Length: 88
Image 1 (cartoon, rainbow, N blue to C red):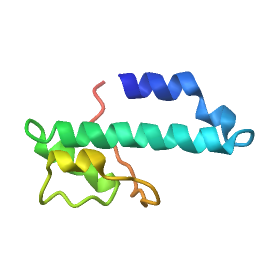
Image 2: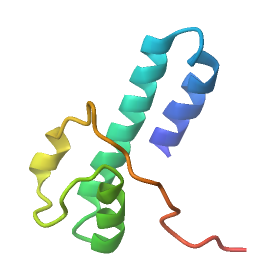
Image 3: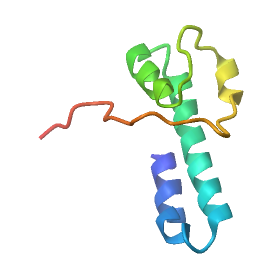
């Protein structure tokens, strides 16, 4: 919820053409928060953790807390698919 709030409060879609530095920073921070969530949920939700880390091309063979410090700068992000099925 905090990553979503951060993203929505900072409105990067409004900054893309006017403030590229802030735009890039907001996207980086949001991606890093999501990566950290992927690492932290590994013990209880390993499959979901693996799907999140795969977004960032991070090897999921050895998920350790060291990945919290993995720098996403210049990381190619794979296609992102929903983690959970939509409940109607």
